[in-house]
Length: 287
Length: 337
Image 1 (cartoon, rainbow over the protein chains, first blue to last red):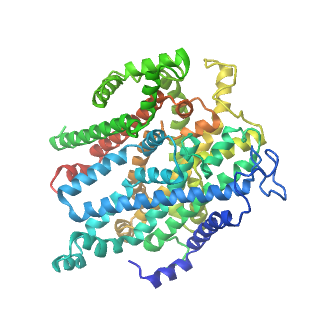
Image 2 (tube, one colour; image 1 turned 120 degrees about the horizontal axis):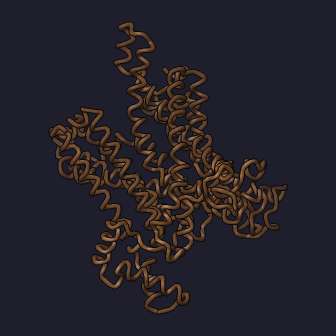
Image 3 (spheres, rainbow over the protein chains, first blue to last red; image 1 turned 180 degrees about the vertical axis):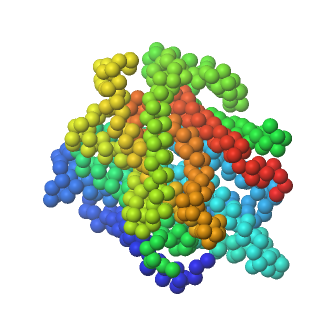
């Protein structure tokens, strides 16, 4: 494991890390500050239908004359919110299942990992489609929950593998000899050692969840009465904006979906590189 | 067939049977889970005897008899399983009385024709590029890696939308919708094939480009990992020719990539749903989209079942192939731990 200062030194020298961090911070700023600074509700009609970008409104209007820039701010915020909820839920369930299975081993591990492996083979999109249909109306929080509930098995599998290798380490033996409970050992002697992995798993889950939300929205199963990047894309297909050439309604959300996913994946891969020096490129950025 | 292999096969078969039963149960129970769910709604509408006139009540009637909805849930589930075993997925609501199996049968060839070439070519080009990047390193690798990562992180449907706009709307080179021109019908003739090919290229390209990006990223990190491993250092220090070492590296890095290929072939039914929606391409994705918009539950459940079966089948084939290729796996799975 890298110590804090060594991590920082390696990270600052990695241009890939800096680029990805800059992208993520910019998008987060846009999503959080945008709706606060924006002067009106995203559903306010500010101009004529499908007005092209001018000085005001800067990104034009949609099929109902709503301000695209405001829609984009709220859409990005809600997409990230859905992604963050899904990422948290997935990592929490994954850690719970993974640490318990990896730490206790035996029949418990067999049973938990068996169930995990069965769930991994069932395609998540199918479960998502069925769940979304069952729920009928879905808020942003519900969307986050159902995406999280279907995406934890990969995290659980990786956490279980890491936990069962940690189980044989000396510091865990010492904790066990001193009489600590299983729960206590998992909290104090297992989880802190896999925190860096959990951070990476969260960025990956967040990126995937944002894209999954958009995919569900395009299938007609997105959040109800909520603006998200996926819903913006769905509208532009629904109202034939693409075939009418109203590019300002679908290029910005497309760009934001891609940049969120690119930024987070790049962040994930640069973290991976910092923790696994073997992957580092031949650029000599780091010895 | 050796006894260890037979045992491996049997364990695997059992696991996939469990997964299949779990998936089919989810397929049945999830839409019925929440109070006020779509199926309850259908039953109550039917019992009220209204809500859409004679034809609608006829559809509900068919649905209720077909799934034995008067029975308790367990009885319904058994009836559902029985229907599936007989290859009967029921009748569509929105296109009543068309059979779900017929509708899926009409859509699947379009999806397969779109996905199989995109997956195969994407896999070949992606692996070559990834291996090349790992071997050359330096600027070539850096540029290729970042652009491949960018390509693979663009959601496939986003690229589809951009391609549709650029090459069918802004520069109208390709048709913007459908699998063939409006007013024609699928038949075997030169003009129809040319027409179908024109409609095919854009959705195909949108899938191919993304597949190349994803495969290249995976192959690059596999190859780099192998290049730094002990056996490579050892072989180089023994003075083994570079070309021969690269051969070993390539072969070892390929194994997971072959799994990846088989697994992506498994997602071919459900992997490009939205590409088809964007291009209004007449495959499974468009069928599912229309079914969702029309609340056509038998059709939705039929499509999800097909997606599940395809994925499980591909996974099983991968495990089977691994059992044959890799003796270590056989030993590890059947032997004592």
